[in-house]
Amino acid sequence: MAAGLTVLIHRYRPREHPARVTASAAMLFMVMDALIGAGLVLLGLVGQNASAARAISTALHLANTYLLIGALGLRPRFGSRLDPTVSSRNGYLVFLGSSLSE
Image 1 (cartoon, helix red, strand yellow):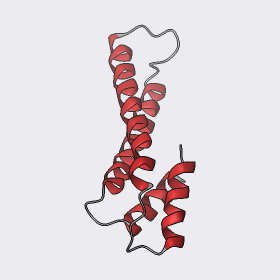
Image 2 (cartoon, rainbow, N blue to C red; image 1 turned 135 degrees about the vertical axis):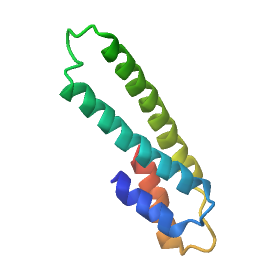
Image 3 (tube, helix red, strand yellow; image 1 turned 180 degrees about the vertical axis):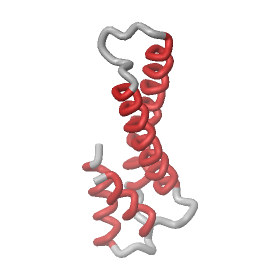
Image 4 (tube, helix red, strand yellow; image 1 turned 90 degrees about the vertical axis):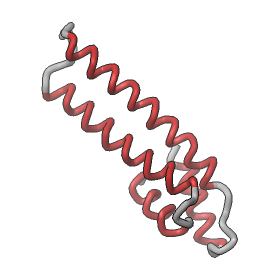
């Protein structure tokens, strides 16, 4: 759903629109979050592991998650302003998708 919403925002918003920036940032942070989380599991940095590597990777994972939440929170804020050059139906679809993705 997030990828589809990012495609819609990129299709119906001008190049410099803040909604495009936040949608792209949200996708980037989502992919990074998945990669960091997968790395934690694959490297065994879970459960009772008390190594420095776990502390560093968990801190990176948490910081990335906060950035992801920030980007997701800003996306509907900027996506809710309908562009007058976009047909009303498509603009409402972008707004609805932005609102529901939270």
